[in-house]
Length: 156
Image (cartoon, rainbow, N blue to C red; front, side):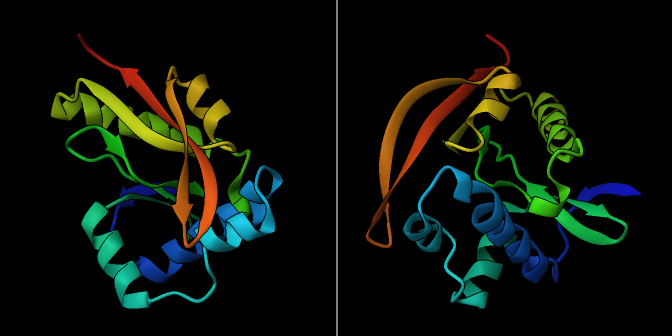
């Protein structure tokens, strides 16, 4: 049983577990250990994380009552977070989240979607019609991590 729902206060610890799994167990195939450790450190400030999640108000996917994925889309069309846990990879959950983002963008009249996308997620985004507009390296806790700025025009 898969349920896609709005974020609720109290989801923050489970979202952190999804975030860490997506990076340490999935993105590790495209990044070094130092990079994933900088990107998703095991030691973090839970209050800062909670405020961040409350601020982006992501959509949450539960599978059998357990949070396995989440993503957001801001009013500007920016997708800040899009993460699927390793255990839920390859089950169509990411597709469902992306379709929901597109539906929400349509509801809000958003003209284009943008995101900073990891190497790991770039093929997924390309599958949904996003194109790379720039590549860059971000300094994250003193470690360089390569991302691509991607965009999808929804309406002219």
